[in-house]
View (spheres, rainbow, N blue to C red):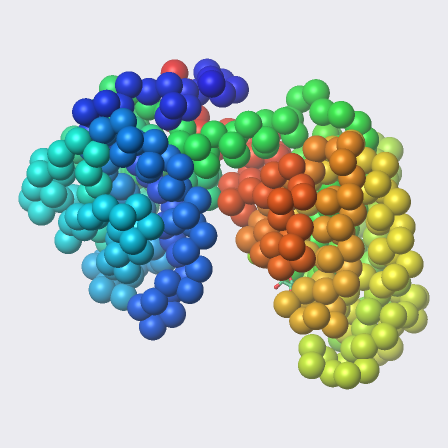
Length: 397
Ligand code: ADP
Ligand code: MG
């Protein structure tokens, strides 16, 4: 199946007997050298199995953490290669460097259906610098380029963008293909009303998204610490809540623009407050009665009801950012309620993006009840704004 923009799916590529470089996202969480969550490795298995079955010679490339262009053993892909080998029940030959004689040898030793993995691409400064010589070296290991790492598609790095033009054929892996398919449906002709739910930690992270969504959506629902800044911009007293005081003018400006464009912006009318994250005194109060010594840590029950109504009537929903400090069960109710509202709305296209939002919906056991949970945080936010992601642009014919 060909994707929007004429991008080929890996299923359309003539990979038999070819060296196929696959940019994967194996940036997994590690603790004392052990992988604590292998979801990102598992996510790429359909692409890797497809290639094994067709006798491709597979060359995997990924980054892990932020070694900043230096070889740092704690960021070695070794545990990742070992885990992948268990999952596919095949050897995975790990090169001891991203490029160079060792890498070339590991790749040239490959036979049909075998897997090689390059060492952490960010061990070399050329990766993040999108250096041409480094990109050409990576490209020299491949006849076909496949990108299955949506989470880094918003970065123009050597392995996501620079190397692609030096490889004869290219396409999207199954993870990437699903991302492009669903996120594209949030652009252009969407079923309306289209509602965006934005929450999480900071206005500053997401103000550009908010601005750009004003032109696309029929309503914006705001929660989380982000809502605090908007409430203070409206003159409320937020007590000890997390507020970005330096962003108040931006927040006011945004609210004024929304009025001009007739886009309703829904803000909390009540919040759950407490004296601290671990305090036992959590209770719901009106946003006009937040005690000076307390902080807003979740949206309140009246707000939940109002947001449920807006989301129940929506036909397209994009959600990024939790409604409260969902890591603490006491302050997770608002986030769980939004997750449920999306899961229950069977008439709508429902898309969730963002690391913490994805974790929250998984924690609520509802990840498979929405249309799509994006594997990318920053990448999904750039996509829904209609920006052209370098890693996707590079896959177009
Ligand atoms: P995502 O990863 O989905 O994009 P963010 O990283 O922007 O989301 O925000 C998630 C973080 O925001 C969580 O750690 C959560 O605890 C925090 N948060 C949400 N609401 C509040 C609040 N009212 N006060 C403080 N922190 C909050
Ligand atoms: Mg986050």
